[in-house]
Image 1 (cartoon, chains in turn green, blue):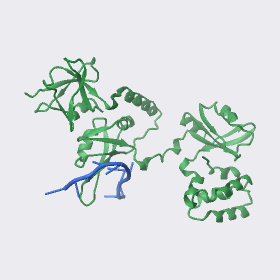
Image 2 (cartoon, rainbow, N blue to C red):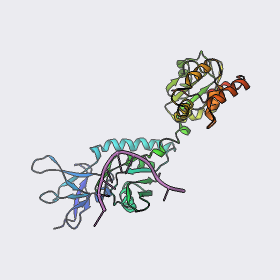
Image 3 (cartoon, helix red, strand yellow):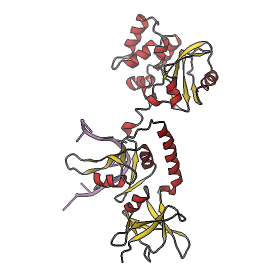
Length: 335
DNA sequence: GTTGAGCGTT
């Protein structure tokens, strides 16, 4: 008594689509997902109780209610039943695509069943959009899956959608995330934050905010204390920030230089702490800053594997403070 | 021949 098709819709009132069933009368969730990407189940309104009922789902297989599928309209379930939110995510990513700075990246797929193959992955993820790479990571010797893999899509909106939900793959819930190795290495090029060098002490955060407002919405101004002759200004739009980089602007009669803010993980203080232990040299550095001798700190940051204090003495005695302060302070990002 | 939080032999 195999039923050929069941009627499925995203909403009770929308026009249903006919979805083929299997020979044994079940319906594969993957078949539903092929028409409704991201679907994780089905529900229907019981003619008797008038309540919504869930369709039994076992390992990717949807089982008919007691009296068969009948002529009911089955409504697609999405994770968290939050289709609207996913649409919003799509919309926001669409606006970003207009700016043309959205590149896809590999996504790690966690929680794969041991037996899931590359082909299985490709079949599943192709229901969301064009797939250009799938990998299942395996033990080199045995060839057995390690239970995770990678996937890459052609379109960024596909990637966004895939990341926004959980995935039922071969009977297990899986998560797709940006892998740790891609946790923001390409951020500095499109940072919303700029470094403002050659600031003077009479420039207040409010002065800077007022000034930079003319270029776009300013979301943050940071001026280190004690005074260190630079500041950070963050814009709402990264394009505004990038457009200003390299400019020399006049604020309160002083020429300040705008450049890219180094990402925080390049923070020289953090690097110093990582290299020499937490805080050991920091008190001296702060003292030097106050005495206009910040040279050693910056140079040590750019020299790998040489003890900090050697550079301190070298630059302190041989340059005698004649290196441009803004060149040095450029690397002195703060918390 | 088992397992179930994580992070990619190039």
